[in-house]
Image (tube, rainbow, N blue to C red):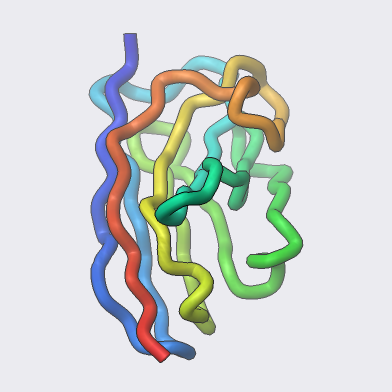
Length: 123
């Protein structure tokens, strides 16, 4: 019912910043959490960040805490501000709509996955 399209990925140097955007095909007015996951080559998809339906509560993976910030405009857009990037942040980043209003950290807690945007961080 909802299509998600990620953008903003690219190449950055270690210590640099990127801002990812996720655009929904329809306004995100339902009480659904939104999240970001990432998947590196040969690795399983892992949780990065999520925010509840109003963007008031957020959860982050320990590996990105203090460096990444998730936000949403409560309409069609979800963002992931990535600062102090590290080479290990290199992955395809996916946004997803949650199945509930509050945040989850498992892939099974989310639906309506986007196709992903590549982030590459050089050392």
